[in-house]
Amino acid sequence: MVLTEVLRDCRSIAVGGHVNPDGDCAGACMGMALYLRKVMPEARVDVFLEKLPPEVERNVPGTESVLHEVPQDAVYDAFIVLDAVNGRLGFSEPLFDRARVTVNIDHHVSNSGCAAHNYVDGYAGSTCELIAELIGKEDMDAEIAQALYVGIVTDTGVFQYPSTSEKTMRTAGMLMSFGFDFSKVVREVFFLMTPLQMRMRGAAFERAELLLGGRYILCVMDRALQEKYGADRDSLDSISSELLLTEGVDCSVFAHETEPGVWRVSMRSVKIVDVVSIACLFDGGGHTRAAGCTVYGAIEPALQKIEKEVRQQLHA
Ligand SMILES: [Mn+2]
Picture: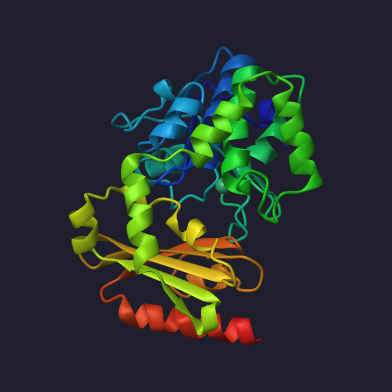
């Protein structure tokens, strides 16, 4: 796909990603916007995203220009959906519906392309990797490169998940050659924790249960427990991935109650369990090794169903 061709006659371009934006979503949207503002200076390019995690907001260049609401009756010539499908756009959804030209770039296996112009590759480690490829070295600069690097680092777990490919490394190397502070990006985006995150991690580790002979680890955190510690959304972010660092474990599930009777269930696996197939049983989505879903009402029956699935897959 040649973006400047697809967007040729567009004077106004909106860029948006999924609700609860992460590093890949934000890096992709800002990388795209910075690129388009450079190569199509006559066009108006706006990014629409929900509030970003602070470490992402700090490390993705240009996030001060992100818009958190849609002006009433606004119409853009084009809408570019990144790291998502329409339906997961949240407040910017109406802009997608009204746009004459639609583009979708994504790496979620569950996405079959939701726009008139699609570049979807379920094997790619991140949406940012796909965008870096589309932009190419010619039109790259240090700011775009840093934005895209944030996404690659986020979605590959700093080049550790199996979705990391030879092409990922070559693309990341090309981005690094533009000279931004990649050590700072990795430390701040991926590793650094707030004191509250540190405490929530401790609480989660203490409550976690090893099941199925130590191959499945589960942690459940209801509202009351979160309130006791003063938890917020950001403080519970990567717990499911960290539970997976327990020796012998292949699959982790972290369920936390976001509001009374609404549970966010986050699942990870090392090698055997296909967590997206389980998340899909609850209308969720994601990837083979990292997926999530939302459960309404009582969590126990859902957890029993999940454990049964995990057991079957471990023994298959
Ligand atoms: Mn992504």
